[in-house]
Length: 389
Image (cartoon, rainbow, N blue to C red):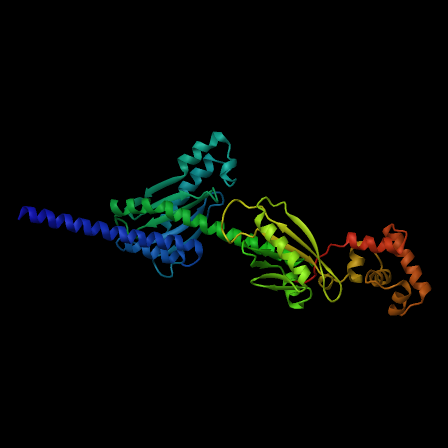
């Protein structure tokens, strides 16, 4: 009987251990899904609470320098504030960090070497809440440096003891939680930067088209989208970029293939693509590769300057940039569009003499001596961006 009892106990312990292992894997899977945006921190808190035998779980970030708190999630539905006894121990640790490292907030790699050991000492801490009403464990986030990711476990009632096993589980999970928070912030930051640079590219009249290792289109700026709708000289689709002219197509595809094969980023070729309203210029260039074989990279970029995509130079823009009067700016704007001085005067409803007078005043203001020179000054001075995206 004694032997059977031992076997049954061992089996029960093995079953419990397996259940804990499976629960842990489930929790970790949920934790790292936060970074991809598939789940939220409240979902993580709920999973953690289940793993910790139903204990209440609160996840928050403490920014030590500003002493601000951000509630991430809780296993308690609709919890709108962090229990004060959790905040007390977290703020105490944050003040200790701020007092010992006055440069907190600077990227960790830039901390003076003399202070590195301080950061290491304060990188993680845990504390039983006063009157044993809970347990808080925290880890310094490398992304923020002065921010602690905090995991709090327990109720509001004094005397509620969080068992040693639950504390150990919380300490074990904490590095994963902090890492997921780092990843989430990095991805959000990268996404925000990508959106900013996309908006910058969308302001330019030159079409920018990035291609992957297979020649498929991965990104278009606003000018490229407009160009794809014109169907003049180039055909742009998700599958790739092609020239409508057979001779141009062979040359274009050869350059794209060479650019994709080039990993150093020094491939650069200019092409002239025929179109109904005259040629457009195309530049095919390679991007430097970090050695990754990921298809998400864009090893090749095409820049297309199509006359139909160029922004119109308005009199208002000329007045702003060159300091011309309204009348002077109007005559110069007509010249920039390719009209002769006589044609410009007729279009504006003024005499040729008035047109010459206005042009002379505009040249004096811009320090130019001829009609060709002032037109060139316009094109070299004006920033080629769209007023509207």
